[in-house]
View (cartoon, helix red, strand yellow):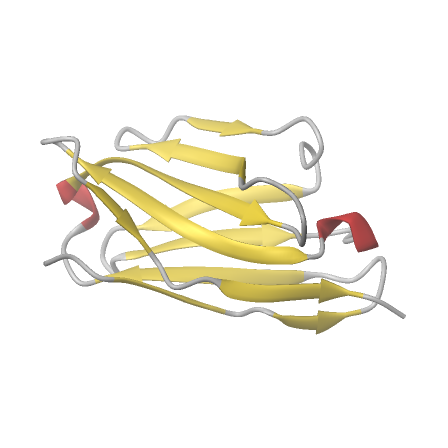
Length: 116
């Protein structure tokens, strides 16, 4: 069974930065694509950013030019660099991966709170 473990969340002031990590128990090549989602209280889970096996990236409009998704195959880790954070970015952030058989895997989530 594949495991995804997130880390890097926490409390940050508006305008600050955080880097989230998602480490997989298998090679990242096992995944056709990987994504970061987030879910704020009372809201549906939303897609934040995605990266394909070939490295193609896409972002939600709300985070474009502020967040950067990347992956380090050697470290089996996907990252989300978040800059210029604002209170609307407060949410639980989840990493997700889908393998080539279209099986879905989720991490346990990491809390990001943006507040002064």
